Image 1: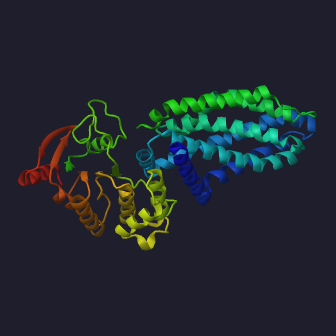
Image 2 (image 1 turned 45 degrees about the vertical axis):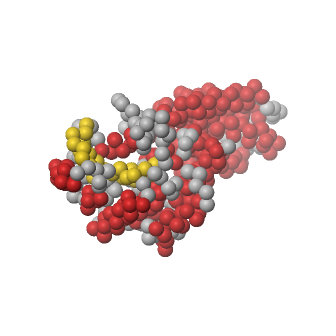
Image 3 (image 1 turned 90 degrees about the vertical axis):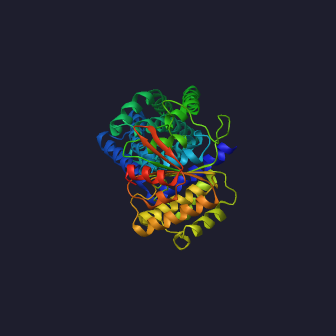
Length: 224
Length: 193
């Protein structure tokens, strides 16, 4: 209970500082918007083609947006050494990770939800009937990206080549969840859409495994 | 207790190990003379302010108070802001503060949970004469009323006069340790304080 209440306090701070500075959200929203618009001109947005390529493009854009968003999440804590203050104040360091993961997932989901109508309009795809399935897929996919990304962000923040290190480590580790997320999204965009529950199970499993790893070893990642 | 020494002598490392922010490569750390004694409540003031520039002074203190489980976080934050003389600027963003004002917020943050051990890592670095005098006076009050203070000093510092015990470090080892007045001055003089 103490862990969750501390994580909630930390999440409140993350949301407050982000909505005050709007650094991460504005960057990622503009980035995803540019990618979606550019690709809409590259492909003829007839429905069949959109259904084949659309989900892959969408998740590719989300991945790059996430790597932009994840990079500063621990770098910000280095400016005034606030990470040390957090470590002194919080008895369970997993609360710090939980808050960072929740904040990153929230910001990524917000970007995705803002892009969804733009993507639907430019690629001539209708999501209305599959919205609950799309939301579930986006949530599990974003959570997976955030869990792995947050763990790698804290490692890369202490490295010299941090700008290169995060994407370099992030892409191979996220390949499984990106493939599954894309597959599930493709099924939801078919003329006769259906929810691929096996894929949803795989995504949930990926999230649980990496969350557990972070819960067990997160303390060591935060050490100097 | 003052820790004196030249650059790279291990002052900051020692304080960060004491705060359990850094794991020691050798040896161990115990509090109150016993290996089984639980870790006391520690307040840490470092080179950096350890507060968020995007939050106001009050928001910073309430945030850290809640994290430390301080009951009545807002009341405690107001009390400390009054104590460090920032009551009228409590709703200003920390990024608009001078170095001296930031250091006052940092001290208030360190005192939130009423620590029994305070660690100060060269707290007067970058402060002007007025802020340095305020800090010295405030640390004197803390020393006389509240808790044990362990502070690292470098260069000439009026805070050296507050120490009742001094340790001189060189290459990560203690080369002098005294509680006697004349010896204290010789340790500070040798370390350039």
